[in-house]
Image 1 (cartoon, rainbow, N blue to C red):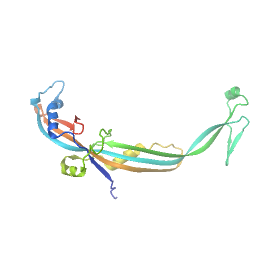
Image 2 (cartoon, one colour):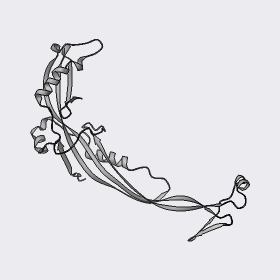
Image 3 (spheres, helix red, strand yellow):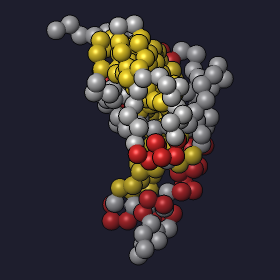
Length: 235
C-alpha cells in the first residue's frame, strides 16, 4: 500500500528569553521540584546538571465535512373544519382523527389537522480544527502566530537542532481520523442516498522552544524544570 504524502506547513516560534535568562529562572526556582511536606531543601543542596533548548511540536489539523442525504419527516398543517383530506401530487393525506377532548372544546368548526409525510433533502457542512501536543493530547493553542512571533527559516533551524527536536508522537493519519470523527455528526437512522466527503484543509507543525533543566537534589534525586521560552513561564 502506497504511503500517503501530506503537505505539511512548518512553523517555529521565536524564543523571548536566551539561555542566560533561562538559567536565572532555574536558579531562582530550582528547589520547587524537590519540595514536599517533609522536605524543604536549600538552594545550595541542588545542582543544575544541564540546561538544554528543545523544540517541541504542536500538531494542528483542520478540515471540512460535507454531506447531503434524504430523511423522512412529518409536517402538520391546519385546514378548515370541512376539509376531509388533502391531495398532493399522487399522495392523499386524510385529516387527523380528533380526540374526544378536542371535539368537546373545539366544536364542529375547529380546525382539522393533516400530517404530511414527506422527505427532506438535508445538507450538512461542518468545519473545525484540532490541536495536539507532541504526546498527542488535545490542547487549546496558547500562542499568536504572525510575522513577529515566528522564525524566518524554520526548517533550517530545526535541521541545525535536530537532536533536540521533539516530533509529534501522533501520526498525521491518526490526527486526521480524530478530526473526521469529531466533524461527522451521527446521522438519523431513517435516511437514504447519503453522499459525504471529508476535505483536509491544513496540517501544521508548530515548534515551541522549551528550555529544560535537569537538576540533582538531595540523595541524588533528579528533578526537571521546563520553561516555555515564548511566554517566559515555567510549565
